[in-house]
Image 1 (cartoon, one colour):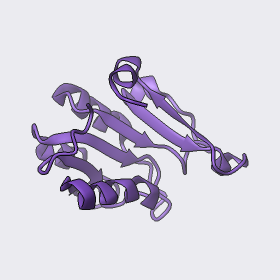
Image 2 (cartoon, rainbow, N blue to C red):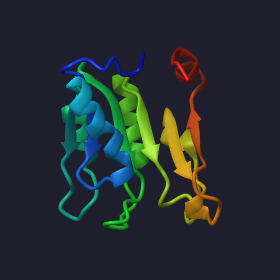
Image 3 (cartoon, helix red, strand yellow):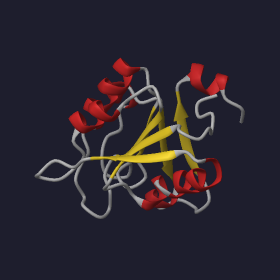
Image 4 (tube, rainbow, N blue to C red):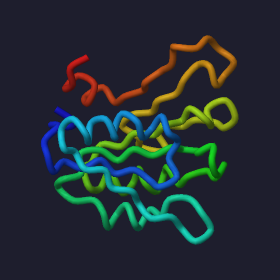
Length: 143
């Protein structure tokens, strides 16, 4: 399974992530002892891809990054992070909720394994959204 939920497993995020990209991981940390690491920020703001490269280890089970956090409005370097994750063999999720109504989405350019967004940010109804996922990963996971 993608995350074994074992003590010592790591989920890597950024210090600037939107709260919806943090709550489920904080809950998982409390329930199963999963550790959350946060990548460093660049001096000009936004996640530092090199920090992610240095933090990736065999314990990292997922890198999850908010594309455009509302607290900064900075467009995160999702393509660079995707290249790092692909090279390391670590699954990569992009939380695109805040940006998808405003920016063009190209999941193939990002090499993201998962991309999530909600309909209400696009003036749609609340309670629904979408999860894009690479077929092989989705087929290997329980619903």
